[in-house]
Amino acid sequence: MDLSEELLELLQENARYSIDDLARMTDAEPEAVEAEIERLESEGVIRGYQAVIDFEETERERVRAVVELNVTLDRETSYGDIAARIVQFPEVRELRLVSGDYDFDMEVQGDSMREVSHFISDKIAPIPEITQTVTHYHMDTYKTQGIVLGDSDEDDRLSISP
Amino acid sequence: MTIEPSERVETVPPSGIRRFFELAEEMDDIISLGVGEPDFSAPWAAREAAITSLELGRTSYTANRGRRELRELIAENVDRRYDLEYDPDEEVLVTTGASEGVDLALRAVVDPGDTVAVVQPSYVSYVPGVIFAGGEPLPVPTTKETDFKLTTDALYDAGADEADALVLCYPNNPTGATMNGAELEPIAEFAREHDLVVLSDEIYSELSYEHDHTSIATLPGMRERTIVFNGFSKAYAMTGLRLGYALGPPEAIGAMNRIHQYTMLSAPTTAQYAAIEALENCDDAVREMRQQYDRRRRLVLSRFEEMGIECFPASGAFYAFPESPWDDSEAFAEALLEEEHVAVVPGTAFGEGGEGHLRVSYATGMDDLKEALDRIESFIS
Image (tube, rainbow over all chains, first blue to last red; front, side, top):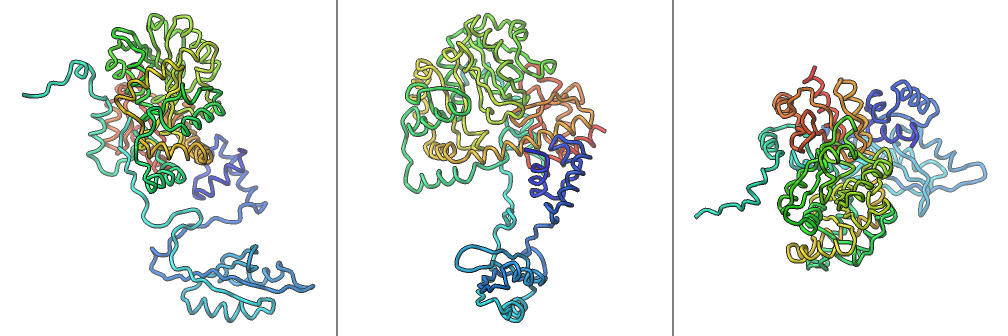
């Protein structure tokens, strides 16, 4: 595995690893690690670093929903054109073109169900190319971004073993 | 009356790790780098196969040697990975952990008074196993000067040319040393020349980071005199499922099976189903775990170097074996535990050549590992 591939894996595992630790883990010089990360950032491979949050554990309520969108295209309008408009809304966290029964898979976030519902009915549904929306509110989250939520397992191994 | 333990038992001291274990168990919030098993759980697919087997009511004994399907998969797997060719009917025995295999082999080949050379520092079971089998253990110390690799010099110095059998383990617990094919070659020659039976514990074979694992049994003239032990504990993180296997010539495996059929009958059935799934579908999980260990290994070795703790470049298993900053490794380990709540195992627990060293296991999540290293650093500075 080359350095950039290994760094991407490690940063996906924990984006807060220090440059020094990344260097130790990959047997590279800290300067080389730093330069490689800068390159990955400037070339747009790494688009950002975010915390993985379990909102169940916070005071503030968040509402998230997955919305299936169906669209009709014409000669002047492509999927990309429609997507370019939808992604502008800060409420939209994820947007993907998918195969199957509908076209776009959109994830939205708001402070309440009312807010999210209004967003979809007032901002998304009226877009001329959109023919149908089906909204699924998240009821509970068990795993996100590869991380299992809920109580972490106790290490039940013997503290010393041969 | 009171039941007096037999002399055989009385001659074997309790495990040196035991006292330290009791000290550690009394303390809260310790970070343990003293654990000799993976911190991962068995791959989910293997666990699910075990659950399914229970749902289907597969709770009876299996054939003494283990389920045929499993033996076939083991034979295919060791052939593909290590060029080891063994017949699943005659030359493979599924055991309750590799430990049972070692015990069976010692009892099957050692006659009273036979000398069994044991390469040290070593896993804690070999010497007691030799004694229980009625043999005389002969420690063969290895040292940091040879990166804890076995050399013919060490064998001659210990008088192993007069021995009847030789027990070795690479990749090694507790040192993390490995030996490649070229380094094993003179050992094989020694064994042929002095007519030694070789018991090769290869339980860490999947955890070799600098070179592919070579089994000594694949070297010329070695197959007929070698019994190989392996299993699912380390590579597949299945320690508690207790499943291993032995590979050897038909007469050796037959003799071992004669003991096994009376004393164990068969290895745990549920674990055998998990193992079948492990061999069929869990290569990716093994690769993923190996990669995690390797990153931790590099981190640990770099940190020790930066702290000024001498440590040879351990290249296998999940152990580093640094020199103890104090000459007395037990005193150091105890003080580290008390002051910093970090557990490591003093090298003295692993026999000759272990004193002055510490076994540091990196089978611990990265956050805890880094925290433990920080504490070690602050303790010695």
